[in-house]
Image (cartoon, rainbow, N blue to C red; front, side, top):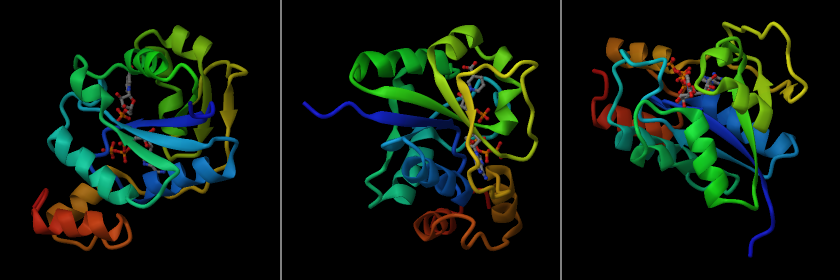
Length: 193
Ligand SMILES: Nc1ncnc2c1ncn2[C@@H]1O[C@H](COP(=O)(O)OP(=O)(O)OP(=O)(O)O)[C@@H](O)[C@H]1O
Ligand SMILES: O=C(O)c1ccc[n+]([C@@H]2O[C@H](COP(=O)([O-])O)[C@@H](O)[C@H]2O)c1
């Protein structure tokens, strides 16, 4: 049996994955007490119903290309078989059933913290999980920050998937904003062009 592990979970639409996600995920997996970070690709965020999304399998493939060769990072498609939209509490329950020996930590950008009370079963998410929050533009907060929320001073890169998509649409370079393998795939498949 493998040793118990402390694993950070980075949930996202990853439409597409970019260098901001990767630097954050690798930093969390190597500069904190976490052993690994799993990137959970959400088919449909409850807060992004109207957003034009690449097919989930395509987004998942881009995540896999981006993290290839990094044994601290892993891509999860667990939400593909679950009801949509993708509610994080349901995924956390499923992951705890699948991996009873693991300790999970929720990773969250400061942009998402203030909106957390509007998440499904937010009280249970807060009661059952440690949350590592890292800097992100559009920072929001909770009226009272609970003890299980820890601020991690991770490097801050102001890149968003929205910006990557707008560059691709405008025919502008996305070199270094996404890993080379992801750039190649976006250009070859003419994604968002
Ligand atoms: N540049 C970044 N640095 C650190 N974390 C990020 C960065 N971009 C996104 N994240 C975080 O990654 C998680 C998933 O983000 P998501 O897939 O929604 O990407 P996004 O860039 O915010 O997308 P979009 O621009 O389409 O809203 C969120 O918790 C978000 O805060
Ligand atoms: O569970 C919820 O109620 C909930 C509400 C909003 C967002 N989330 C999850 O948070 C992740 C990031 O969402 P977003 O909207 O910032 O892309 C994504 O995995 C969503 O499924 C989850």
